[in-house]
Image (cartoon, rainbow, N blue to C red; front, side):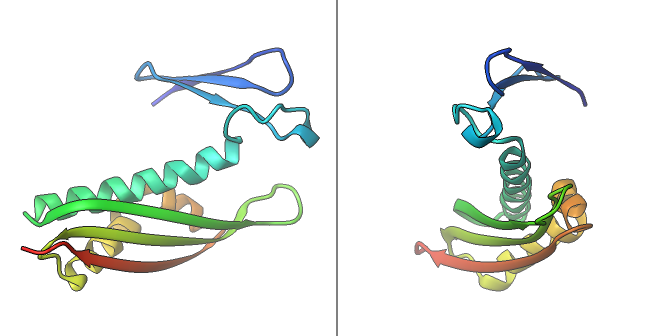
Length: 141
């Protein structure tokens, strides 16, 4: 895996190009010289983690032939006060929708993501306490 990050020479904006050919913009906060035009780099770390675990949960449920129709993950994080300002606490708030979905099946998918598959949350768990809440919404059979 690889990427290139280029400073845009105007404020603190950067454009990253991924090895798979996608572009992502990042910017700093105004108090750090940025213009608030794009997500902060640490927001990208957090949203990447949410994407990683949501991907896992949906894939696990689909492979188990469960009819999942939606998966949202809201992440709320706290960071250390001193540099490096690592994440110290992250709450994952899952809302999973489907037809005939059982809570225990979804809990297992979330646990498998965190314990085995999501490399992003595994890395962040080295510095942050991880908390998870789960809401399962049955949309009928």
